[in-house]
Length: 435
Image (cartoon, rainbow, N blue to C red; front, side, top):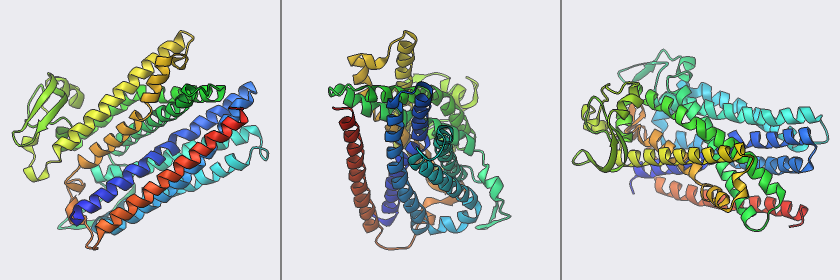
């Protein structure tokens, strides 16, 4: 394995691992705050137990996410020094603001964990909301930096020199809002379905205590609402990509040839050598409409992009199909969930419903990971789109393969610790409820 591939795999592995905890940190604090609100409203002690249990889970994920996020910051400097030399002064502002949001989140989480008998219930509940709001801002500030990589602005570039740097303009780049919107709702959808699935497993294991039932209901409520927002935010993001990064859109859809009334491709296996897609379902004009709001509009294909600037089409296309497919599946489950709720029932009251939620447990995070593959792989060969290629930002440090191996071993160990801690949390709940 050469150094370039090892460096990219290390960043992919680290980012793919960290993003799970980042999304949980954005969404789950709202679950615990909602549970506490239910306790304040009904006086039912179960909801307080649920808020306390979830808050301990949030604390575990917060600590691990802080470690993995810090490691990512070091990796940017160690693996891609040429990138950081130029990008650091430009996108330092969102990273600084992310740090501020992180510290505010830590303070609010401390109040929530240890303030049950020390502050008023209202102040305590607000502290939970602050944890969630801070987590969201922390996420969107990081997305601002990634958006800049996809839509670089706030500087002048000539003869390899970056000048007249404007960090504010750089932070408010054109990709930021579309990416941040899509990412935020994806965090709620993926976390909601994952948390609901975990509690559904215990319901099916003859541990039908009301604790798991109410927990799954709350998680599903957030997850299904977010699932309905995903097609809207995804459409906004796709139109933004079509305008700014036609090569990425072409790779997402395996769109090899520029044409009007471009067809939307569902499924299919790209043949990059012959510039065609096999076994695909085509919807005429749909890609033109989704990209430009007009069924007759021309959509740029890879034939208009220099060969050396083509993203990896097969990987990007498959990842995009997985993201969209699982996103639509979550929305379909949401339709059933709200239909049953309207009828005065719950999908959790049926065996088929429990099986559906259990099987759907990983799909949100699979879609999330696939979405980031689309974002990052679809931008290649650029690390700063149109300005700097990824290969030109690589470090000269030897032994990157050993660094990759070390990171994989450490993250595997941390994953085992997290699973053990979470199982211990659930066991303590079962003991309290006599299960």
